[in-house]
Image (spheres, one colour):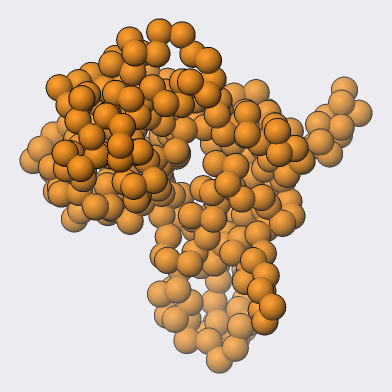
Amino acid sequence: MAEKTEEKEQSGKPDAGVLIRADNLVKIYKTKETEVLALQGLDLSVEQGELTAIIGNSGSGKSTFLNMIGGLDRPSAGSLFVDGGNLFTMSEHELVRYKRSTVGFVWQNNGRNMLPFLSALENVMMPMFLSNSRKKKEKATELLEMVGMGHKKASRMNMLSGGEQQRVAIAIALANSPKLLLADEPTGSVDTATANYIFDVFSELNRNGQTILIVTHDIALSKKVKRVVAIRDGKISSERVLKEAYQDRLAETGIDWRSEDTQDEYAVLDRVGRLQLPQEMIQGLKLGDNKVRVAFQDGKIVISGPEEASASEEKNGETD
C-alpha cells in the first residue's frame, strides 16, 4: 500500500473527483530583453461540479492560468492535469482533441465567440461539425432556449446586444458538452441586469453538474460564488467561501452583493507551508526589512515585527 501511495504522489495524477489539479505551476514569458514570471508555483485543485471564480489584479496571472487550462498556452514547469490529462505532456494532436471535447471557452471579447456572418443557431452548430455530433440543429436550438436566446436564433452578431452575444457564447461553449466551462470576464461588458441573468445561467448549469471556472473583476458576481480563489503575484493568496446564510439567497433582488459581507476569507498555505499576507497587514507591521518573527501561542500562529517581538520578550522577562 505504501508503495502505491508513493507512486501516486510521484505521478502527480489527481484523486478521483478532482477535475483540475495544478501543482507548483510556473509560467515564464521570454523576450529578447527580459523574462516575465507570470505564475510562480501556483497550487490549485477544483473538484468536479464546482463553480469557482478566480479574482486578482491585472498582471496577477489569473488569465494566464485560465489560458493554460484551456490548452491555449503551455506551462513552463510544474504539472497541470485536467480530467486526468497532463497538459504539460500532451502532443499537438491530443491538445486539439482536448480543446474540442473537454473544455468550452467564453471569451470577454464577443468577436472571438461568434462568426459574424453566421446566425446564432449556425454559430452554436459550428463546433458540432468538428466533433461529428448528431442532431446538431435540435441540440443547438435547445442550448439557445436554455440561455434565453431561442427567439434570436436567426440573428447575426450585429443584430444582438452585448449581453445577448454573451448568452449565445455560453451556448456555443456548451455545444460539445464539455466537462469544464471556462469564462474570461463574462460580465465585463454588460449592464447589471444582464450580468445577473448571465450569472443565473451559470448557476443553473452548475446545479445540473457542470464544472465552471470564471475569471472576473465583477465584485457582485464574485460575492455570489461559493468559492472564490484570489491570485496575487502568480500564486494563490487567499480563498473566499460563501457564508451559509447566503447560499440559498442567490436569486434575491434585495441584497446589495457589492457591499454586503457575504463570504469568509482564508489565507492559503501552499504545499510547502508558505502563505501570502495581505499587503495592508504587512504595512501595519511597519517593517524595516523583510524579516518577521513567528511564534505559536495559545494555539495560534502570531506574526510580529522584530522590534515588537523583542519588546514583548523583555516585558515577559521583567514579569518573570
